[in-house]
Image (tube, rainbow, N blue to C red; front, side, top):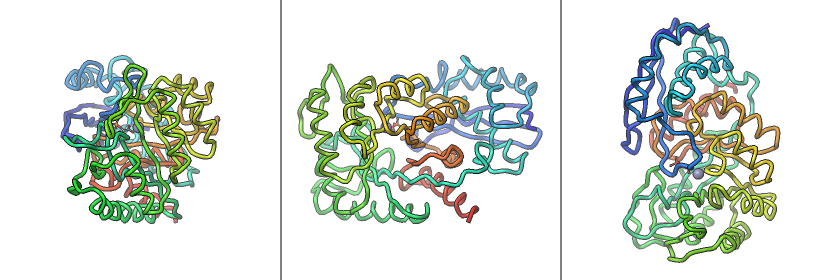
Length: 386
Ligand code: PGA
Ligand code: ZN
């Protein structure tokens, strides 16, 4: 059993140099810490990262420190006991980092890996989803850029290691192609280390099609949906809901895109459903639509809006709630993609969570130490089992 004797927290910087939280705990089996990432194209239905502010959460956590020692943690589901104490007092980032640190302690105490605390029979590895070229809110650039936020590569390989190699090679190949096709290309990367380009959405898809790998797109449509229209900048035009449907249908019909995330605004369950019905063999994925929230997922199921869901633990904070969302998705044959955030730390627990919950996909970038930490952990898990 684990007893949390002391808790403290501090500010650290994420990959974007924004402040985020690192929680440290002292337990009967040693000291552990874990950090939380930060999103930028956040959904409006996400839980807040901090109750009032990061510094207030640090103080609150300190004040709560002595309460935790009354509870004994023996298994994953005992995280509820911690949640009963902190619920309503801390934000999602703080809760997620705290619970992650506790899982690390529990794994050590039980001489297990974190994923084994969730499901010791886990055996299927998630497919990697790597962000290769970016636009939208993640590409902070003066000039033109694609309106879609992420152009993803989704290798289909036997091992995670092979998938990682395909991602790295594809990213290099994409650089070579962008140098040829985009006269403004300067080999610069964005928040998630994806290439920054002045090409537009279709031009990027044409480039990536040359690489001959299955593709995905995160449209992150809420980011440019205002007053009932989708405001495109490259080229400059507004699309109505119907026109957005037509534009995306055209893309799904003409490119090897197997995965389409947030194609419409974050409350448009109906348009998601219409697109899903039209393209039953391609994944229509909810992120801002569902925000790792059980109620939102229930609504998406009722409306038949999605065939896959993004799970970002810090969109909701509580790992018990993450578990409920995963169970509900599985019961309804909705595929699960565990995902990093655009502002990341070197924390690698995401790989254990994705494998433990038997997610079909893990979206965590391609290069950069914060992204690689998660992929390398997944490779380590796979190699430990073979
Ligand atoms: P975020 O974006 O981490 O900046 O919220 C990632 C995504 O939209 O998938
Ligand atoms: Zn997204």
